[in-house]
Length: 96
Image (cartoon, rainbow, N blue to C red; front, top):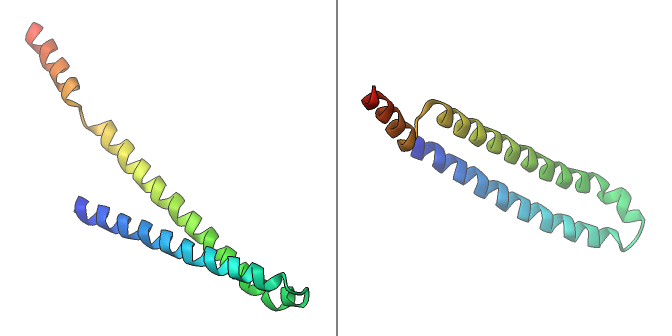
């Protein structure tokens, strides 16, 4: 199951990266188009806003994934003992 989750997270991150690159490219082209004349701002403003919304959603997705990974990491650390922890406990038990 861990490999499945890791695979899904990796795929989601790759999709986010690709979507961001595509959106940033389109937004750059749109900005160049809009600089030609002020009238183009009126025609293209809604499209530019949609591109920015797409970038914002990808930011939110990255934050959610980071939060899930942090939560998973914190949970695993709090319930598992490292080898050093186990050895120290074993040494304490042996001494008694």
